[in-house]
Image (cartoon, rainbow, N blue to C red):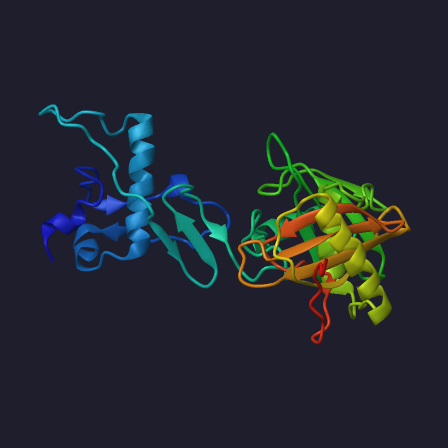
Length: 305
């Protein structure tokens, strides 16, 4: 093995033993001291990440000078380093161990706000502090649009089958929780919120089955939607399938709908709400909404005028 393989980050790190207490947290696997001879025989992906992170720390604290004696710069030029196994993940951007066990629900896996078991464990501790004994597979944690920080919210089913809603100060590192006996911001037509997201996710893992539109409703709401798309001059593929969005709104007269447009499209799905036979909400989606029920033999509808 060539000595140059040790130079993973410029001229940084020529040490005989590595210790990395600065980047270890309570969920990280316990590291061992590695001497130089052992290191030279086995440079694994984990050590590459750890060395990179340690070098970033030393550059930031001045333990490694910005310039060498010959005037050359010490620089970190490697990007995209990461290591993962069945339980943990670390990369050279965050330099923090994260426990990435199985996600606790079927919606928020890696999209937008990954819900790691580590986070839910912290949420679980806060629930325990509030005397909520909950079902492990009936906990959802999510977030809404925010301009600062990462506050979140969620919902959980307790062992006595009661639904508890909560807000947390941080999704990534929750320390404070506020409990609610009812959803404080139930889904409203043409409105988005953190608690609406939680409502959708909770329904996705608790509904025994989805309800489908009967044929008469599919025709009715398809015709209403066709008229809306025409009147609003929305340029979409003319053919679509329609289904029922199984979402309860604050307005009891609101009917949730969803669908799939003809052909291959980046945003090939849609959803929204119809109130008193008027389309009050229409939005395009990259994936079919989790609460969307489209029958396998659904017809294709289009404007025939």
